[in-house]
Length: 480
Image (cartoon, rainbow, N blue to C red; front, side):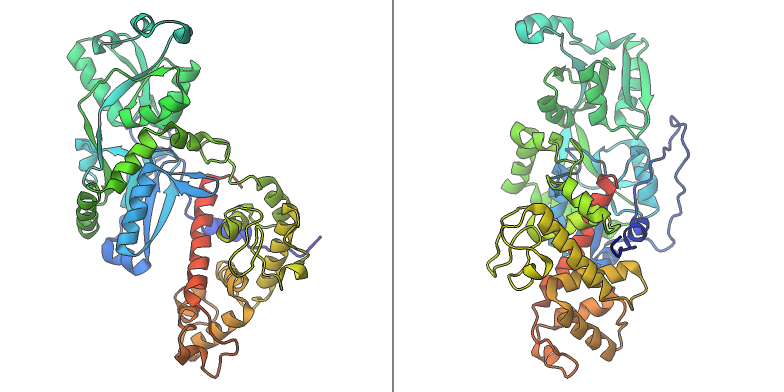
């Protein structure tokens, strides 16, 4: 068997994966342990770390991955916010919505982003940003089986059209949601019983809507914006009965993060006046052709595939005991999975080999995808072997990625500069990566320790960061 990269499982263990356990009174699962830091994390720490970490659900409104590309209504809003403050955006998929607040308070994330309704109960524990949307809650019910062959005014008579008819009905909702609270209040208003079935947070509202469509349950309640999107996927559901006034939807923050809240609020107030904001809402709430992307086979919500080359990537990476999601992140960064792509510099194919390098690995512009991918994996293997002196597997992989992008000589130059200036030459983060950025300046690339000359180091610096961010996203959204 070929030499293997024994780094994939180690890197995987270093990821912060959303814990799939429940909390709250209605869950029978174990609570998430919460340790609140004595030194609260706020905007200065986010700027220092150059990263805003967001706790999300895997949904059309919040965040999903389509053909390797992050999407989602809230994702698109926050993606523009991080550009404003000059940091990267990291999305952590939380598999149990009951864990959102505990994870936020324990600083596993800086924001909650899951179509979160502002409620009094939640405000006892956390703060909220300016609401980016207001939406009422609606009843989701199934249309009659023959609805397509009947006039709407006829089949509408078979549905619940007034809240008073919810008495004695069984309705399934997320137990720790504002929907559950609304049903409690509605029951008091009706003076009759509504049989409310609490569902744990590991089932998102979009899944519950699918249960209604499939006939597994008869009714649920959700926000109208979520229902609108899902009606495009499940045309046999009716969402016309509103059960509440329009409620505020916002991002959740820790109470001990006032600087982040002030900056986000000020930005949101201005952003919501722009055509870009209105287009994002229109794209996800009204454009059926776009919202359907979330149910595509190449979606983390639909078929669970990253690209059309998943099978080939998994085959190649298995030969090297390499995490296929990390390799997918590299392929995306190189070509966005577009075979036949050629850059202005002449780099070609899925792995963007230069004409002088590709043939070394048996890859030519007309090579089939499996050959291109295997050649790329061979080069990653070779570059990984170039850094045997680096003990930490994650740092070694970052040197590997930088080498794949810029060539070994330039990375060795940056390493020698780091050592000369008192930085650790075996650590990429905040050490060698700093001198990669300096290799575009004559004072550094002309230093006597440098042998490879000028490099536009910002590209390599960003290459490594983007691949690792995307890998983290893929690892949380797709099974190994």
